[in-house]
Amino acid sequence: MRRERLRRLIPYLLIAAVVAGLIVQRAGLWQPIEGVLSRAAVPVQKWISQIVAQVEGLTQTARDLRELRQRNEELEAENARLKRIVAQQALDIDAIKELLRKKW
Image (cartoon, rainbow, N blue to C red; front, top):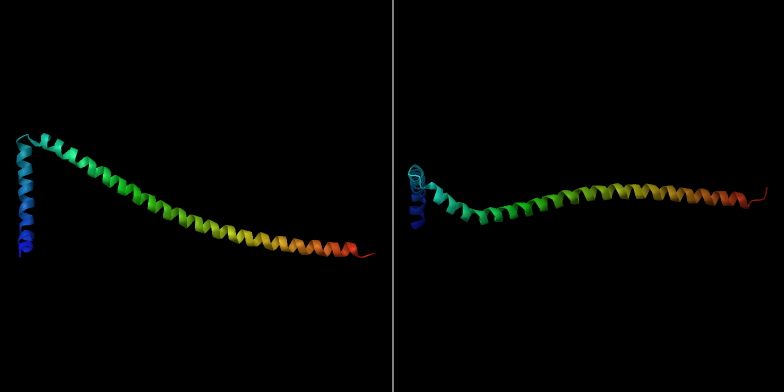
C-alpha cells in the first residue's frame, strides 16, 4: 500500500523539484547549489569512468582473444603445410640415397 502511494507521488515530486530548480535559478541562487552538486558528482563521475574503462578493457580482451584464435588457426594450417613439405623432402632424400647406393 505504501509503495503504491509512493509510486503515485513520484511524478509530483519530480515536477516539484523541477519547479523549485527553476525558482532557485531565477533568484540567482543556482551557482552555490551547482558548486555543491558538482563536488558531490565528481566521485560518482570517477567511479563511472573506472567502470567504463574496465568494460572497455574486457571488450578489448575479447577482441584480442578472437584475433589470437584466428591467428592460431592460420599458424596451425601453415605448420601442417610445412610438415607435409618436410615429410616429402625426407622421402626425396631417402630416394636419392637409395639411388646413390646402387652401383651403376
